[in-house]
Image (cartoon, one colour):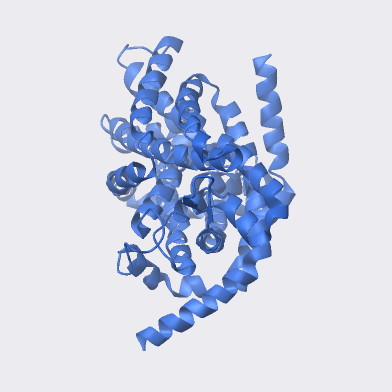
Length: 455
């Protein structure tokens, strides 16, 4: 029975990630890019200044500083998608899938700019009177109350999309495969259960503190975990400098021809790349606008500029490094592992003995920071649907689902999360497209004032 349900979930996931969703995500991103006349990209340095805190004003509305908002958003994106998701992309679609992750991420920059600008532009208040942002609010505040069913739909599927199933599964897997089994300490159902319980207890302690504690925790953890991971991956890459150019050639060649070993078609490779990019940076899915909507600012465009840095950091930089480590070490050919275990093999080859343990530490930071951030999204979704006084109940659901994720099948989890992400993307991108003239008007006004102040 459970096996049949799992097969149905995987089948639905493969079906829903077809042409309509690709057109929505890639076509929507392309539209946003040209409709904005590339303006956001032209002010990349300005975005970095905003992120540095130069324009922070504690008296402005919101709950998080620009840096904390981006850190919370990155905590939800810089995670298992960059480590395990990249390995899954290469396993399912070959190295060429990485190229399509790049394309999707570049277009995702403009999508993030538009959706996160809207998140501040059309902030609403929950039933407790607290200022909130996110797709559910810019749908109802920007398009009107008649669109509320779409906002409710987003919130319902959003609660599934931000569940901890994938992160808990992969963290449990790496602990089992790297630490427990090699040292004869476990590797059974019971050890997975214990691992899941421990993770759920740690996460439960943090998330009950709410968004301000999450902002403080992720603000410290995200930079630290990124530095450790990037340093280790760069060591692996530059220890094999002669393989860097061939690795890029493999990615570009397979992006248009398909990989001979895996026999993937071009369409399947594109779909795999876009799916895993969405899983990695979540551009167009609607999660980041919920974090950026809590930013302390009265300038929507300013927060959109900060948000657009996400896909660049997440997919263009970190995912590429992971991919190079896997391709350079040839573990994608020589190993039958998938997910996090494949990346662990690459680290073990690149840095014998110690590599897989370093990865385990990094993955623990990646997974835990994501697990700290996701409940915030879920509580806001539940609060929108059922009322703010009930939103805290999502935290208990979230903590319990961690244990389910630790014991579940990876492919089924991927299928369920992919379905949820797809269903989140439709209301998010469609509403952003309808409201895009409002963003463009705000962009023109903001940069006119910015130029006057600079002159």
